[in-house]
Amino acid sequence: MKRIFLSLTAVVFSSSALLAADITGTITLKGTPPAEVALSGMEDNPDCIAMHEKTPTTHHYVVGSKGEFGNVVVYLQGMDGKSTGASAAPVVMDQKGCLYTPQILAIQTGQKLVVKNSDTCPHNVHVISAGGNGEKNDAQFAGGADLNYTFSKPEMFMKVQCDVHPWMFAWISIFDHPYFAVTDTSGKFTIKNVPPGKYTLVAEHRKAGKQTQPVEVKDTAATVDFTFEVPAAK
Amino acid sequence: MTSPSKINRPLHWFAVLTAIATFLLLGLGGLVTSHEAGMSVPDWPTSYGYNMFALPIKFWKGGAFFEHTHRLLASAIGLMTTILMIWLWIADSRKWMRWLGVIAFVGVVLQGILGGLRVRWHMDYLGIPHGVIAQSFLILICAIALFTGGVWHRIIGQNKLNVPPALRSLVLFTTILVFIQLILGATMRHQHAGLSISDFPLAHGQVWPDTSADAIARYNAERMESVNENPITAFQVILQMVHRLVALAIFFFVGACAIQSSRKLGKADGLTRLSWTWLTMIVAQIALGAWTIWSNKAADVATAHVLVGALSLVIGAIFCIIAFRRSVRTTTTQTETENPTALGLGTFVPNKQ
Image (cartoon, rainbow over the protein chains, first blue to last red):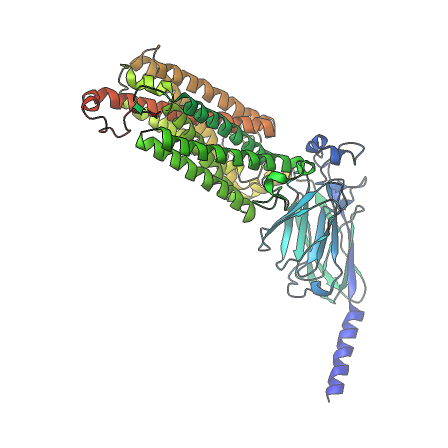
């Protein structure tokens, strides 16, 4: 009897994995976003400016020539409690050229975040949560050991900053499930292995706002595209 | 031997030196906040794990430069205040002056601990009392410098006009208003949200800005922040508007102080001259406030705004002290002569030699 039960369970799990499909899509931005601002504070810091040919700018809007919209966080709504973070591969964020790479990232609750310092100068990694993940502040010297963090509460755009170099800031979105993605520079995203079902898909950008669309996942990949508009200035 | 008429000049000049150093420390603290560098050295009382006084120079960079030098100068002020307290206790026969020294010592210790806890506990909001205590400490040290100097001696010794109660009350009220304004300013700065309103004299293009949730979301969306500022909130927008309105009120009240001083005390009176200096400083402060906004809160400009604000408060406080002391002296000359310990502010028996 026990053997039959285990076999049935295995069949159910494997078939749901087989039935799982990806949600893919492209996000575009209509309109011309505000001009990015030069990180002028970097010019006074020889360690940092030496790693750049010209003064870098902010990257609030990462947009391609045809409106491909990068750094948009896409996720399924209402999926909390399904985190696989403890067994997932760590997410890496580097400090390179006195900038965070990537600047927008997403992670699961319980998933390890590894912060590296590839620079020749010290940084402090200052995590400021508004969603119950606490505040952390650690120094990290050049060539120092990686810093590891995990977060327990879902939160959108939790800020990480360096107070030694105040132009350095990144934003981490934390989900209690694995069904999320961040668009690349071509505006594309893929949310992998979504079980069949009807969902609400959310696309959220720090400046351009949030959009939702219904999506139904069957046994083949579903495609959902979003189009954002630059918020109108008043 | 106590000599009521003799000034302890070394003590006085040491108090003046401590006041100047405190003013510089206030400026350095202002730069720490203006550069958003308060958390750049995550540990305290050590710095990056080193003894604070032995931190290698290679780490004195970026935000850490401002934070670390602020800690070093604060330590020096702590030492100077300790010396000042001991010196006052030994050399000044006025009991209340000795206790002022003790209060200054307790204040500087508390201030240091508060600054350290702000770092250790990751509590940005502790920066607000840290800033306010800094301003209060500056007043106290300036007052000690005043009380130990020849100017205070002359104020008591000369036959000056009494300061009318209405003028005294006006000056006191205005000084309290300046102090409230500095609390508002400290609260604004320690939100770490940059400029909640980025235009002046209008506010988000209006006489009174829209603070609805949609409007706040729009302000944040439009803002292209280049440093690690927090998102702005409706509270911060309203706070800046209140700060602007109180600045206007201060301008009128300080103007009233100057005009009333001229009328009641005469143009040649030292307090009248002080009141016009105060008004000039307020005008400069309003200009610096506007410049802070137009420069998108440039660190140097914002810090100058903090420093001129602190000087304005010190002038108001000294004006109050002198005005009340002159009035006490004038109205109780007879009592003072007969019973030197009868006055609430104490009598002038300055130095033990």
